[in-house]
Length: 424
Image (cartoon, rainbow, N blue to C red):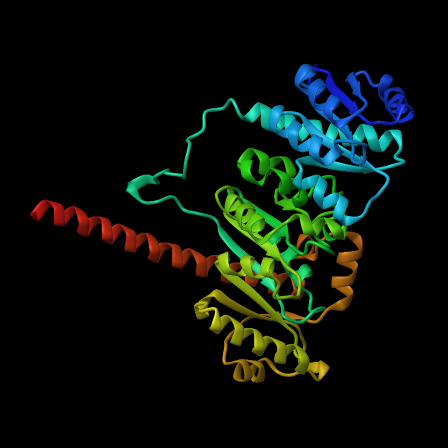
């Protein structure tokens, strides 16, 4: 942590609360309370005067409330990070706070540890951005040119989706991301995004503590860049990175389809493969993710309800005019001995080739999920691991061939343009 003290401004109309907050922070050697305001109006003036790193803002105050004061401070003192405080924890309060520019939300009463950890976390996120901003950046759209005058290679977005719940999408997404990290070593860069915003399980399956999440980007979406993205990614021992879902279901409302598109497009510029886990719904946000994906890993299982829903989803993608090769059909829990429908019959019914079959092994899958250790990190000879690695190889080969064709077409176009100028 920096030797600079974290300057904190307290804004609360209740004297006892102001004094309690001062006492809680008094013995923290890296924190300095620079002022305490009794109203929203005074809070704005003290923020301009003291330029605090952190503003602890009460949401309900007579006169100017915390929402209005936060909006003003965000405009007047851009580097001040707002932490909203309230006895109410409803989703509406949280959403309004984030839209006003707040970086976090504390529900009263909170403990000393909760207060200090929140202040330090918000400060560190802002400090990373402050350190990054002086670095030279090219304004406007990216204009890098790869060797040979060809456009740079963009990362590919692969979304795992199923129109039927409970078919193992999250398990496949987590293990597929890790497999693709292994398959592209040592230089490959893979990130896993949990876009199941209300009840995402990626953090649990990877045994990662959700200290940061995609919700932290909602209030800073206009400032989004690679440095800001890096502050919310969580590293996994495999070298893969993860962007987790919000820690509470109501925080999903903070993210719009446009937000999700911006986040994924930024990740595309920084990673070779962006693997996205979604939830089972054709919600606007999910449709936005599917629209910008290069490949959709469509998961089904060999039973009638799942196949029926998958057929309906194919009808939807046809109406959306998705190219057929965008959909990669995967049959999970495939086991000829279980009495399920055969892969051949599934292909005939859906009129689409099955790209991969993942065998039924509930014991391995369940142990993996409960321990937070994905099975692809264990025995590579296990049939489950082999199936996931095969799926990863199919996707990498397919996308690399598509990239080669695209680059060849660009090169041919450039050659024709040069010849046209020469002969003119």
